[in-house]
Amino acid sequence: HSKKEPGSMDYYAIAMTTMFVLYSALSASYLIVGERKRRTGDRLIAAPITKAELFIGKLFGGILSSVLGVIIVILFSKYVFHAYWGHHIGIVFLVVFTEILLAIGLGLGISYMTKTDGVSRVILMIVIQVASFFGGAYFPIDGIKGFGGWIAKLSPLTWENNALNKVIYANDLAPAFQTAGLNLAIAAVFLVIAIVSMKRREGI
Image 1: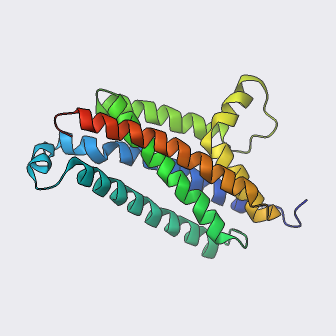
Image 2 (image 1 turned 45 degrees about the vertical axis):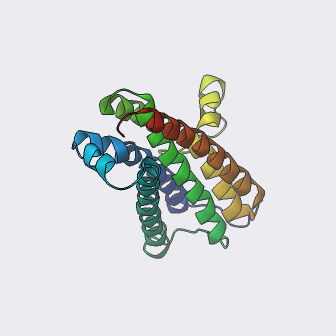
Image 3 (image 1 turned 90 degrees about the vertical axis):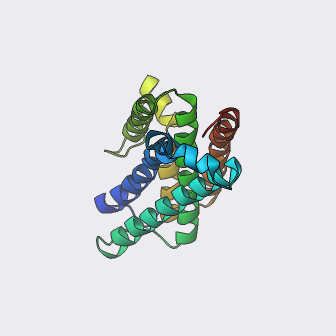
């Protein structure tokens, strides 16, 4: 029952931003694997830092780069394309920030759960593309039923886009906090997997 309805630019500003964030999982999967491929992992292990400090440094570096990218995307869409982001921009950034944590946790977790970089990237590309398609990143998907509807409910972009639209157009903040909590929970699970796997490895 919102007085303002999203136009195509408004819709895709949200949909492309959340999809852009999900792609952070690919770069996150390379944070540690990249050191192994460049054969710089041994130097890092020999350095006077702990594995925990190395992991935290990589994690915060990935988060910071993703946050800066998202800020640029949102501000560009707002001031250049005049996309509408509502009056609760802080809540919008909160939801998107927790999605960044989810994406980075997913990328790191999958990279440690698979044996090679190629396998992890293939898995992540499939997950991202399926989540984007059924999450409405390419075109609106409303009222889809059956197996497709079940997948749509599992897509993090479905939660993100629904929550952001309710915040922006209905001033309904509850879905935003629910989505943020769910994002943080999933991110925590994958980060724990990555931390435990890293501790068990001789190197990184």
